[in-house]
Length: 149
Image (spheres, rainbow, N blue to C red):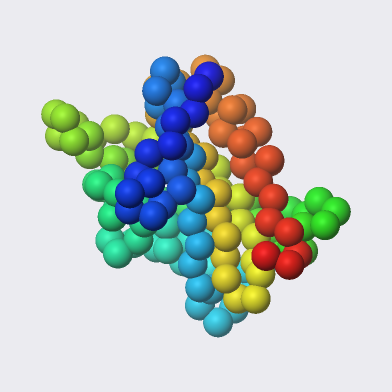
């Protein structure tokens, strides 16, 4: 597996595995005046897929999305203490042929001083149960934001 950085010219942090289509985004968003634990899961979907957000600015057209689950996780030693894991299902419109393609993702989120730092690891629905689910979960598990970020 070879991850290539894309979207750099727009200031984003985005990687893609050209052989499998696995995509990784690193995003940040100001929380809506609540702690990470108290923030409704719907807010995360809105923050990630906002028409003004990084993913949309990089040319990804989102047709629909849903945050399917959210849970608090214990942060590893040295990390920011507030951590959550979310699961997403979303549909993108492919630029080449304008087809709707379903994707699933895990989001790992940390809170530092009212800012949510989010790693989104997503794979295509057709490959999800064939190994992409486990790869995305491992990528999300590896995300780490230190206490002093």
